[in-house]
Structure formats: structure tokens, C-alpha cells
Length: 115
Length: 113
Image 1 (cartoon, rainbow over the protein chains, first blue to last red):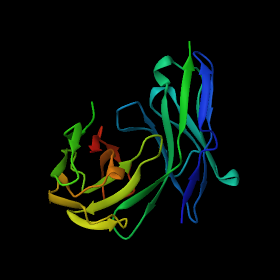
Image 2 (image 1 turned 180 degrees about the vertical axis):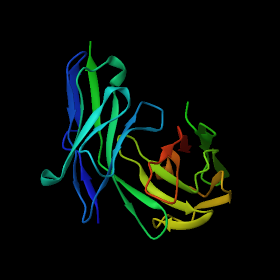
Image 3 (image 1 turned 135 degrees about the vertical axis):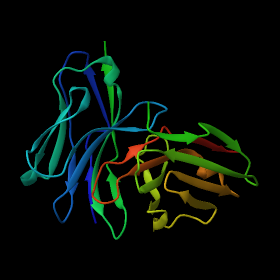
């Protein structure tokens, strides 16, 4: 069975500083990996995805993530954080079951942005 | 703006009430999902519909009853809920024929009195 670990429950970062969120996965085959962001009172918005190919993936809102198979990691980065990036971030691994695809989410990392 | 629309946004109900949550998408997606999300927790999968047929039920209690009337609509019928069922209920959809990202609605905030 697949699993996802996000080691950091909270991260506080100053506006304009860089951000890196960690994600480690466990999956028996080639993983399908996603990062989602959730602002308070809203649903989840897809930031980026990795299926295969280039291990550095570009997403929306200036985010990128790097897939490292040797470390079973898929860390999310942003060079310069904006106050609007304060939110909950979820890493997820996908797997195709008999019908329908199933996402397993990590516990999430809450990002606080200081002025 | 989200492409998956959920109604109502908020719902307060007693434990003996019957209510329904609704979800609609017009992206042509053939897979639709219900998730339950408690505060400060990740979403937990409840049900998956594939081509309007129930394909995954994650051992959800029978007081939650999903329905997929057509490829654009997904309902979740609620009856005799418990206080611990209070949560944010999220609907999502995705293309079915390959592993594509799920698109989420903004959810229904459900409170059980």
C-alpha cells in the first residue's frame, strides 16, 4: 500500500524568503505524485504533478518540485514567498485501482507567512 | 473559480434529519469522488464512481449513501448522522481513462447537532 509523509506540520517563513516543503512517499511501483494547496474554507487546488520524464516539475503560482527516486522524495519549492501563499499544502501519491484512481495524502504542512 | 460546484456550502442538521449534498462538473470527467476532511487533517476518500458506477467504497457507514444520476452529477445522501460526522465534505472529479489529477470543489461544511 502507498503512503505519504510530510515531516513538517508547520513552517513559518518571511515574505520574500524561499520555501521548501518536504514530502516522502512509499509506493511499490512508479509513483504518480501531486502537490495540492488548500486555503481556509476552500477545496484543494492542484499545484503540480509528476508522472514521468523530467524530474524537475514546474507548477502554477511559481512553485516547482523535484522527484528524487533514490530518496523517495518529492519536495516542493518556491524561490520567493508571497503573503497569499499562506495555506495548507498536501503531497499525494496516486494509484490506479481496478476502476478509478485513488489518492493517498500526506498529513499536510501549514505554511505561515510573516510580513 | 472552481470547475466542480458543490451545494450547499454550509449545512446544519440534526441527527434524525435526512439531507443531501450535491456535486456537479461539466468537464466531461467520468470519475467522481467523495472525500471527508476533518479539521487540520488531510482528505479521506469515501467513494469513487467510475462511468456512473460505484467502484470504490472505503468501508463507509451506511448512513452515507452516494448516488450518481448521470456523468455530471454526484449526490451524497445523509441520514441519521452522528456528531462525529461533522466535517468538510469534498467532491472531486477526474478523467477516467488515465491517471489524471483530481479537480476539487470547495466543499460542504457539515455540522451535526
